[in-house]
Length: 363
Image 1 (cartoon, rainbow, N blue to C red):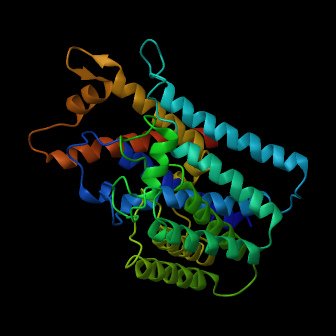
Image 2 (image 1 turned 30 degrees about the vertical axis):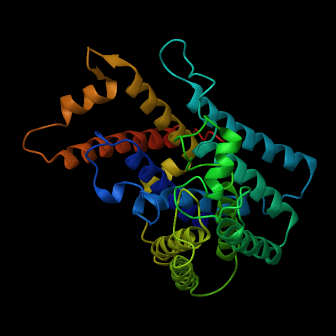
Image 3 (image 1 turned 90 degrees about the vertical axis):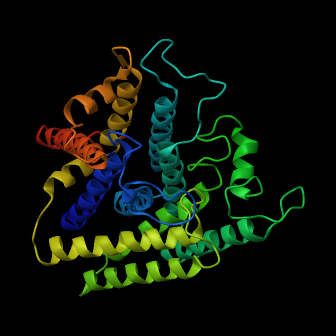
């Protein structure tokens, strides 16, 4: 089990590093295309990162609660952890490093990455504690099918036909606007909106099921994981023909394809680390052991760097970027990426430091 969890920690650490990489370019106007999200429909490498994390949350839930019963104490721990995640996410949205030290409450964003993780964690853990694997599989299928039918075929209250486009008659955008109003990432939609959290639960449930598969006995497990991953990818792209791959909507095709990619990559790591014993990338594993802490600090410090001014025309972020990374002989995209890579290395170093000090902060 230790080796299996090590494989998951490695994938989690790689995912966190990738998340920081795409979130902290030197210049948002100079970014290589694979390091940007799809504008609406479609799937880029960057679009894989958040679903990978939720997928790993599901695997971790399987191992964390494998021997725990559905007692009041267990539910309390699940609820407390969920509330901590949601609270940290809200803090990131509200906090500002300059007076009055909080964003305007009438427009502050309510949803976010950590908020979605907290909600998905709570519901997935509750389902895992109360359902067998066959029921979990059925719930996952029902979520994916029901979400497609609802978004694609149920008319809106005004009688107009629904659409999957970025428009007011998109059910996801319609509900988010009604519930959140001005408290959204963009005026017309939020990538971590309310209704998209439902299929995100399916992503985590698929992680639970893969966790169970990892914990089972059997030969050629790595090959089977790779096969399951390929199957998920194929099914996701087939569904894409009628329900487009879309991160903002967290479409059912997106769930299958991204979980498929996650399973495929996990299978490859499992083969390298657990079957062949070729250990690599320990620096990522260390960051994975304090994943939420590393992600939270990277987001908080990035926000501080963007908001604290330096001189008349710069902030800490832009000053560091222009001073150390921008050179006439380097392409702008390369300079921007170099800044992001250095930031990632700093947080990987933090993960290594915490590991050596045996500090594991459980949120």
